[in-house]
Image (tube, rainbow, N blue to C red):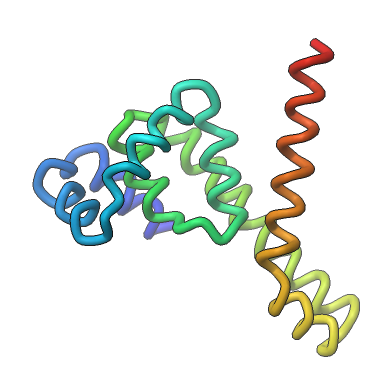
Length: 130
């Protein structure tokens, strides 16, 4: 969480001096613009998704600060997403043992992508129904 808060601070107050250089070094300027468009409608869901998946989280925390997403919303989504991710790994490893632990760690990206797909589908169904 300290890393997320540092990223947020870079985006919020130091983007012109530090954040812009980070974006240039990693060629992230287009990604940051894209993320900004996602923050306009679904800031919490965007941060939550990035926190749970393998997507480079620093890009999202810097962008959250840059686009002035509420720091509390960013922190809550980060804690929830990261907490769910690491709790899921720990619970499955404890429950099903070392063999499954190795398999989960090997295929966690696929599991994460499937979860996000289900989440997006559920959100789309919700939007269409209501």
